[in-house]
Image 1 (cartoon, helix red, strand yellow):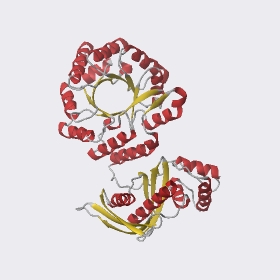
Image 2 (cartoon, helix red, strand yellow):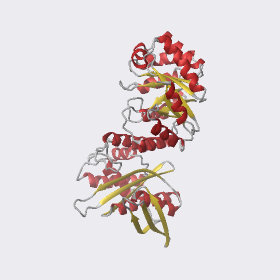
Image 3 (cartoon, rainbow, N blue to C red):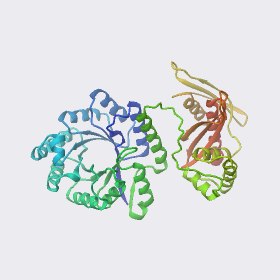
Image 4 (tube, rainbow, N blue to C red):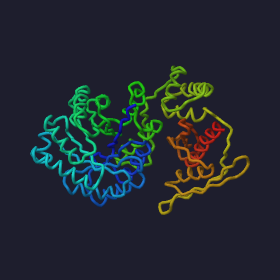
Amino acid sequence: MKQIKIADTTLCRKDGAFGFKEKIEIARHLEKLNVDVIELPEIINAKTDILFVRTVSSFVKNAVLSVAAGSSMESIDYAVAALSATKHGRIRIELPLSPVGMEYTARKKPPVMLTYIAEAVAAAKAKCADVEFCAVDATRAENDFLTEALEAAVSAGATCISLCDSAAEMMPDDFAAFAGAVADKISVPVSVCCEDKNGLACASAILAVRAGVEGIKACVDGSGLSLEVFADMVKNCGNTYGFACSVRVTELHRAVKQIAWIAQNAKNEKSAVTVANVDESGIRLDGKDDQTAVITAVSKLGYDLSDEDQAKVYEEFLRVAARKTVGAKELEAIVASVALQVPATYKLVNYIINNGNIISSSAQITLSKNDTAMQGICIGDGPIDAAFLAIDQIIGHHYELDDFQIQSVTEGKEAMGSAIVKLRAGGKLYSGNGISTDIIGASIRAYINAVNKIVYEEA
């Protein structure tokens, strides 16, 4: 089974959309997804960019952290300083090799570029054991010069090579033949980076892998190869064709949604606390849809229901569909309210929330189990986060929060709020629903409802 190395380039976006906090959060998600390499852009602001890389180094312990350099010798020194505390660090020398790129971007003639490649890679290698040479426009380079440049990089100490089809001018089979020919000539692992301008990036990348390439570069919510699409393709076709990757597929879609959400809000300069009104799932059902269609939509949302719960969901769906079209949000609420209804192991007794703009949010929650009161007190990033942490403290277990939604059920100042919490345990989703005029109370009830379903099924 061939193991495909995946490098994620999400944090290399050049639009400056991500702030410090957004970049940290994205890096956390990528580390949890178990991507092989997390690529970071070249150090521009020595103070803040180096601080960011060092901060990420404190929690990224499995993935390789790759920092771009190569525009100058100073950029290599910055990369070395940034990676000083990294467990697995890599310096990525990125240079153009096409005639136009060398002339107008790097301002170097071909002979000078060959010398510079050797000097840059050697300088990086002297201070970092892992050095990648990346030909940013490899498909536009002259073949003989490309070979010379890559051989110069390897001779100077490059431990891996990347070929980029930034122009997206080659069809998948031609690109695979091009990349495979290079992989045959080069003595170090070769990766590819494909732009998705024509919707062919995934095909180009996997055909290149089958031609001898060992790794690919992908991203979330960018112009390149989609991490989600490629990982799904590996999951679906890997056993048949003999390839696999290390990405945790069970966490993939949730993490990708969260990263895309962070990216979209950063792009639109929105607050991190928003309620989405647009249903992007594509689920639109009405009373004419049969049970098979409804349960297929439920499965698309990530739920695996028993036959009994499927019947309950469909019955409630028909009641709701008689009045309105049912989208993903309505279907989530139906599942949360009627599926896997169980006796309450934990019951909410009371809660006290402290929150303000000059204090840390805290929650004191009291639950009862078998008529015994249990209390948890926690500080969190906001009142709802604090409440959820307090519940985790009481039950002695932290379940993965897959999704959290808040929506209004009625209108006016005394509007009822509905909260839906989706927790994941053992790879399975459990949904809880809570309704209250107090949205924090609704969220707490929804969380406890989901926990009770997990506890009941585990027992």
